[in-house]
Length: 392
Ligand SMILES: Cc1ncc(COP(=O)(O)O)c(C=O)c1O
Image (cartoon, protein in one colour):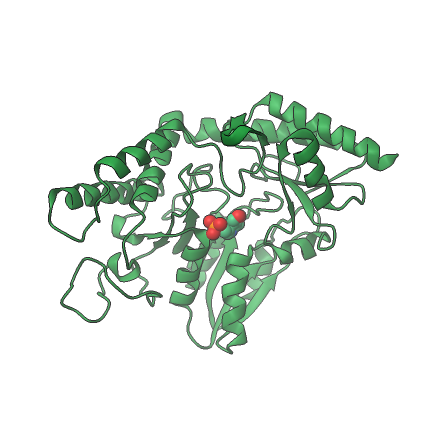
């Protein structure tokens, strides 16, 4: 695919940011900026109201999409990391205990580690399988203590794609009266997620990955039974007479001018998914993933990490070629073959410790909805070629 400034690249880095976006996303953002780009909720004039209505419509759309009871439980954020920080720092107080899996992203690990260093909380990390990255529910259960306030897991690992048993964890958390937070960075827009059926209390999602929106927008679902500390205080466009942050949701958690173009772009991405059918889009990604796995397994120098089973993983594959540094393989794929993948530790150091790849890193291949079988063929040809060199 040819991108601006003559960059021709086969893009296999959709786990970082999906690219390109459906045309409707670009169109919607452009039209919003040109026709309704006023400050939403900050004035009573027609343009401000029109912008507010567009943003409200997306809040409602997101609520429907994830079966969230009340759209006021949807809080817009900058990205998954921002949403995770609000959820983690907003809910935890001194003396709390938190359980996470060893496959979490730094966006979960770092805010927790900072709170731990301040002497505020304790963390238990449940080890996942060293080959597949899978999590055993019994290990979560045995880590629960009297002061466990929160269980956090990713829905799918961004390193191996491994799907976590969030249904079972949600049931356990519900039974034990512990809050359950899910990081759906790799699955929102790809897998059906019903926060009520899954007993999810907090859910952080990006706009820029599977939901097909632009960068700079994401969100946090906060079950309204929870009252979190706000992390940012400031203008909300509501209760302007009050010198303290309003208590009402979502205003309590959303200060400052929102990312209007980003939010409507996200709405267009979700509408595209609804139009095409989430199951059809996922089927396409998983068919490509399955094909890549089948062919990669045949290359003796290639080591694949993760379940190697599309019923157990999202469209994310991590590999290494012999002992070659992952960064070197990524460099060759980019410069010699015009193929874009991600290499290194993928912001998930504990996941790499789990898999034993903390030195070498991995080469991550993440197909998206616009990749084709031909893209896969080109990638496989390139990998076979690199594998031969490594052997020689
Ligand atoms: C599992 C997981 N969590 C969190 C993040 C952080 O997402 P964002 O870049 O939207 O902050 C990512 C991004 O790759 C991820 O894959």
